[in-house]
Image (tube, rainbow, N blue to C red; front, side):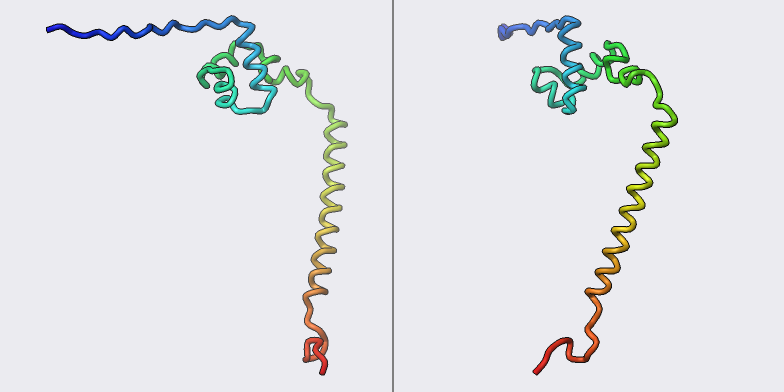
Length: 118
């Protein structure tokens, strides 16, 4: 018996240099798009992006060192907290005013005819 072997082109494994990998990962992390979208744009497999991200130094991969590596000062945090508390207080006041207004507008009128006159 003679077996028929189809001549199909063999797929060669693509190789990417480190600069291309770094550029794709930086594009992915800075764009805010999902890994699937970036992988499709570049014609890659999504899992490659996650593997390539591990190759980058932490500062480039968006780790703690990317934010400058320093913790915010206590004064900065306290001022942010104070601003948030002021905003919450203001929003509570607005909510209370709206509740009172809704209560006034939804009260039935004083006479039994509900405002209708003959």
